Image: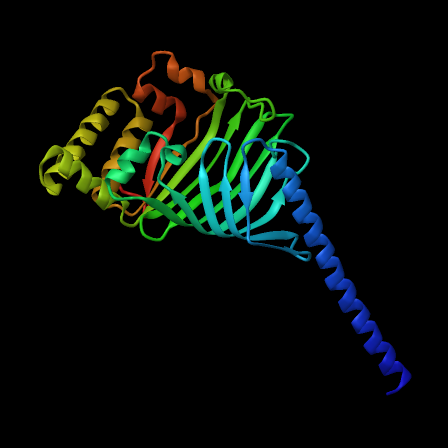
Length: 293
């Protein structure tokens, strides 16, 4: 073997050893920092079966994740990939992650007062894939949620985005929730089986057929839309008619709020009714394809 070939072979071996050595070092350091962050969060129990770091894509992937949060919420995932995460603040100011094989038990800790209702319909667990992408601006005190999603292959797909202002993320207390303001929001739901389960549950509670239940709710929404029209409240009218259309033709519904100016949460507790709130938020309910009212 010539001297040049020996040199090239030695160089390739050297680079390979350096690469895997660097990868081992990075994995070890990330694992150490993650363990430290968990230990510094009271009440957090977090475990995973494996961790890997993609140096080129700046991504950390955890497999076999099991998380029990201080609030009692319990979530599991086959795989979580983190591409951005704020390590400098106790409450992260930004994070971007995706989760595959999510398992979220329907418990009061995870779903609050909705848990008995969901379990009553036979929904014991939400599962599928999810994503979270948000950023907090401490100077403007604005939280921007670019994506919060859960795609359950059986029930449906839920996606949320929005902006909330006047938020002190680092020192937030429950009573400060009244000082928040809503800048914009959009909630998109792609139905699969959830609406069938809800309608069946309503019909059973009212002891009537599914068709009778559907007609009754549609008539109620028509009445609400007519009342909104009499008040010249276009946002409320759009919302009620959009909900009626979705109820009868469940597909993909987007509920949105795009107020002309930020709406303080406190406004909702100052004697305004539902229709005034919908007008303040400039709400809409659109279907894909959008309905022709």
